[in-house]
Length: 145
Image 1 (cartoon, helix red, strand yellow):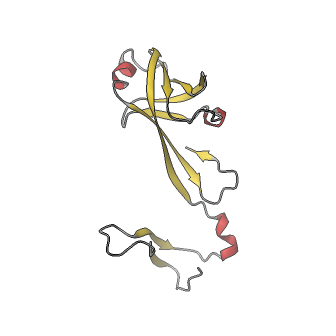
Image 2: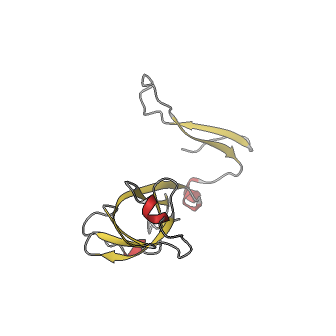
């Protein structure tokens, strides 16, 4: 809904649909309003949401390659994800999705500068994370890292 205010102003917006009796934070976002935007021009704003996909390590192929699983549903076209960065564990090494491996598995390649044994140590019981941004007003629903 349009809002009338003097610029610059600070805005705090909340989720009013959330039950106020619950012990949760209802703040949706806050920020400084610097420019007036007409409702028909709101699509020009670069508003995004962080997304995270979570998978598992199937096995190590060598010191710089692993086979992952459960990051995608079976039948998903994985080609849009080729070249995207994935991380092993919360603070582990970062590699790139290289190709598919069978129907629902995929291959992740890590830099050759990674010392031998580092990837094997990081993969013990770790998950694979794919973090990306999805812009709210993007008609093509592209994924950006």
